[in-house]
Image (cartoon, one colour):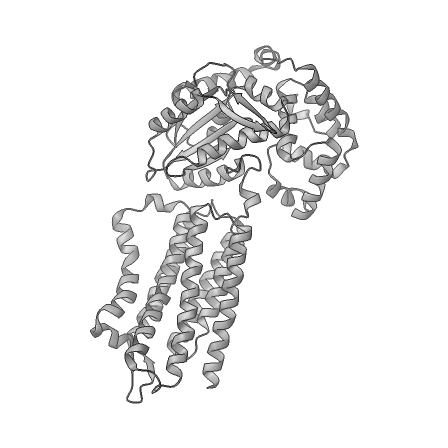
Length: 509
């Protein structure tokens, strides 16, 4: 009875941890991502395992109270479900690191063999089941020798796979995620091995498994770190992390780049932050709603990127045709009680990664390459043409400062927008030294999640400085702040701000 009491306590504690995981998943994590939904599947299986374990312990507590077939069904289902957890959490890491796209059919079959042989055959074939668990003459449940020795080996196999995936994809994992994987392997393998071989009547492994998986959950990016606030698509930093890992892992994909004309972008931005965010969000929602729900990234300055992998229902050419048809039409924006029709001229380019861009830096240079023309129909440009134009652009910009200034096109701002830019610039001097450092980090392309390490402060301190910056500069969000800086940069009016912020320009001389 004392052992049963301990086992119930382990299960109740594990149940509380899993319920806490559900709260984190649905309130802090992005459930629109496939990997988050896969992790939810892990939590559902874990909840089923704990519930089945509680039920079977209750049935086995008094051997003669319940019929043996009923107990055998629950015991068998529990043992099979318990062995499903390891391959499922392993598959989460394979999917998270992008290695799923590289697995052949043979590799997937080999991956599933331990699960099928050690779990499902236990229920289907009675001759095997008697070696996995049995009941003595007093109807007391006992684990068989096959379960005690082979199941820990199956668990160790999947732990080795997780370690292999982590090593192969170490470039894509943060330090916290690497530590969480080590923690998970230790907390899932060691207690299970000890329990099955030396303490078969104890059930403490379910508790340690719940703790290990919960630690992994804490390292999954929160929604506000992953998404762009206005478009609700993935932000530039997320694109860097995703595609940088795919390039390093050798995964192939097509990136369809949608670039809004600079003139149209400035006109939309000058109409006001509300209308700008509404249009950017409308375009982002349309792209996310495409068949198959491809990954969509907003790379700032009116540029979207849609990635297509081998398992995508879209071909790059078909998606370009779909986007060309949609951007040939106008977009309807409802501001207050007024409907406004807006035509958005864009350039469409399909870039193969890593064929046309073998590094994330090259891909970002293509996404950042400006589109100055403005046509009635979307302009479709081949990747090789864009690559050559970008290379020529870089040569001109790097030749000498005078030539670059002659090449760069200047825009005359409307009087109202010019007044807004002057007011924005005049308030830069009101920022504190730390707020100026935060501003400089954003101007250098860093995201909010990079700042704690760069400035040696907490993320809450960064958010506090953000609120103060927004208040002093009279902007509503980081997106609006970057719009102001982008407009000033395009109009060659950014240098006074850089000087006010104390940026070191010596590298430019």
